[in-house]
Amino acid sequence: MAKTPLGRLDAAAFGMLELPRLEKAVLEGFRTLGDLTGTTSDALDECRIAGVVPGSNLRPTDPAARVVGQAITVLNTSVQAFSAKASGLADIEAHNLAQPGDVLVVQGIANISSMGGVSASVGKRQGEAGAVVDGAVRDIDHSRKIGYPLWCSSVSPVTGKWRIRTVAVNRPVSIAGVTVRPGDLVIADEVGVCFVPFDRAAEVLEVAQRLAKREEDRLAKLASGLALKDWIKL
Image (cartoon, rainbow, N blue to C red):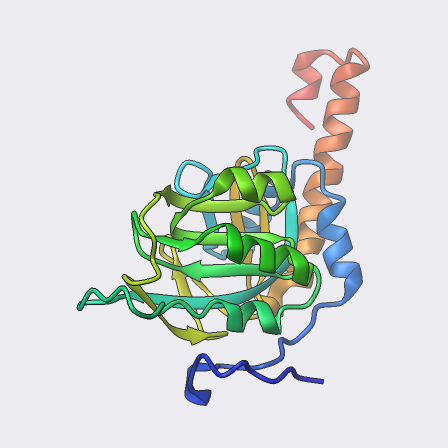
């Protein structure tokens, strides 16, 4: 059953209140990949899908974190008239709609924080796997402490409360040039972030598993002592 919004945004701001859901087997299949984003990136290439952002563009706050989950999207814009009276951020509406394992995906503003410690704490309480922010975040020590990993394009102590306005939840967003739609699959580790379209997730997984098996077999034969002249033919 779809959740009820909290009233911070008009009804027209919501693209959907409930995400289409991928089969659990698809999510688990991606989670078992050893080289998570590397293999997924190769599979996206083979499927001719542009959906990869390098870790140098979206930097992880926790290099050990690995995330596989569906996107809950937030669109933030800059506020022209500065006001310190009321926060324009409404990512709480996205947190409210999230299911355990979802990933918050925010199109934000460079060098102005779209997410801080309170938002990370809410996301953690909701069971989210983490967040991807094309823009700035802050309080990253806190997010690390509570185990809520972030991938972001910048960090900044400058609050977005008076400088940013949330205009949409669960509508398409642009993350480092990649269009991400609500329900798309988010795959992230210390190497980068991959976005897999919802309706092609099973196809991409099948390719990724085939590529992973081939790589595993090649490495096993390399370790067994197979001559390089023979190994490079594999």
